[in-house]
Length: 119
Image 1 (tube, rainbow, N blue to C red):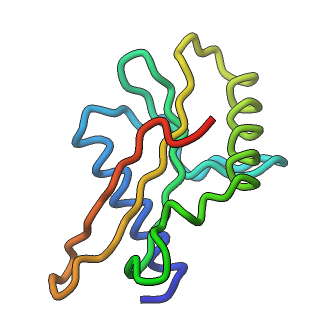
Image 2 (cartoon, rainbow, N blue to C red):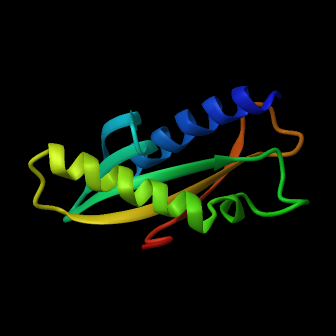
């Protein structure tokens, strides 16, 4: 599967996972001058900014390792801009969701949700 296709599938699987676990998806693929946030969701007292990383496997490195410090800073700046444009009293949180295709199982994915991954 090409990287772009895997990324698109990964984001849709992550959104499905979040909905199934009680999150309300507010926005996907939010883009502005400072960067992009894959998924913005809410659950309980949190507004959650989610970075989705999909990889074919973790043999080289786990997907979460590609959320570098520089990437984290861009996500935080982008989230700050989103918060300044939306009336939101919820506590912000930054999560990472790793998505891996299951070996040998068609259309099956392993999802690892890392809550409060950075700040």
